[in-house]
Structures are given as C-alpha cells and as structure tokens.
Image (cartoon, rainbow, N blue to C red; front, side, top):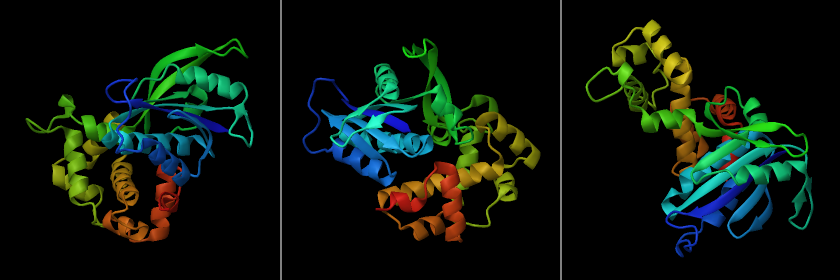
Length: 273
C-alpha cells in the first residue's frame, strides 16, 4: 500500500494561525479525492492518506504544493510503501506507518520526500530524485535511503537557465526549446523537425542536448510539455478534458487519455470531478 503524510505549515511561522480566508485543508481533501486516494487520519492540519500506487501519491503531492501557494501556507510531504492496517475509525497502524512517521520528521516545508522503495517504482515517470539522507528501520536494523523528489519538467521550466547550452546572451537552450513548444502548443502538426527549424539546430544536436539536460528525447519533451499544460487547464477548470486535449495539440481523446495516464499515472477524468 502506498501511504503519504501531509503536514500544512504556515508560510511565516509554525505557530501563526493560517489565514482565515483560506482553506488549505479542504483543498488537500479535494486533491486526494481527485487522485482516488483516501484520507485515513486527520488531525490539526496533518493528514495520513493512502493511494493505489506511488505515481498517484507523488503527482497528487506535486499538485498540492502548486495549488496551496496562494494560501500563505506550505506543505511537507512524506511517501512510503508497505504493509499497514486501516481501521474504520480513522486509525491506521503497522510497520509502514512507523517508518512514514520517521520520514515525516525529516521533511522540510516545500518538500516531498520518498523512500527508496517508492523511487524504485517510479523509474521513467518524469521525476527528479535527490539523495536526502537515510533513517534506521527499527524492524530490520537496516538504513533506509530517503530522496527528495520534484517534477523534472516543471523544475526545468522554473530554473531553465543552463549557461553551457546558451544560444543567446539571455536565454538558455532549454528555455528556447520550451518556449518554442509553448508557442505551437495547439498545433498537432508541430514536431521535431519544426522544433529544430524554430531554434536553429540539427536533429542530432537536439537529441544529444535534450538527453543530457532532461533525459528526454525531443518527442518525449514535446509530449510532456503538452500534457503538463493540459493538466493545468483541467485542474483550473478553465477547460473540459476534450477542450484541454485539443488546445494542447491532441485531436484524439483516447490517445490523449492514454498519454496522460503514462505521464501521470491517472486518467484525466480523475482530475475532473
């Protein structure tokens, strides 16, 4: 079972009350529900949740962090996989819960920290993992590696400036690639050849540089940008699923849903409720 702990932390002080005009608790409940998760314990801005798989747990956590930024609050999230018992009266117990509590004690605000078990099941999910430390598993006597996780594409889009690959004085190679894709987001015909022509680089160079920077092929990068933008549109309720697909270059709803599930581990319909 995949279990996640979510703690809401005030932006300015751990003791200060959260803004009265914001309801981060309710936002978290809505997102857990959208990802088909279940809240098994809640107390004083702290949640224990379960999910069908690690991909849903991590991507739900990423969306929580994005959505809560406007509420003067931050989140600390821990995720682990293991056996546990869930009772009807919002009680949960087991070795996995003990491990997760130890993980949560080490998580900083604005962080998602996962155990090595979770990381092993998320290979190829478009995520960046950075070693965060380890903890001693009292049951096994072994040290359990911990990793901080971020959405790889989102991190690239936010930090984007990589001087080694600069194509101009102010813009990095990756920024140019992302901007070109964004400029043609609704065009289904936009592909690798168009991208190469747009940024003035050969396909071989594009393949090599994207692999080195983002560990993605050009086609994977184009698709990821499209899917992340579609996800934003669906979550904001600015577009329905079909409209979001069309606006981001997908003319076939079935193919869009297939790609979406491969990228995020859930169908787009799970976010539209």
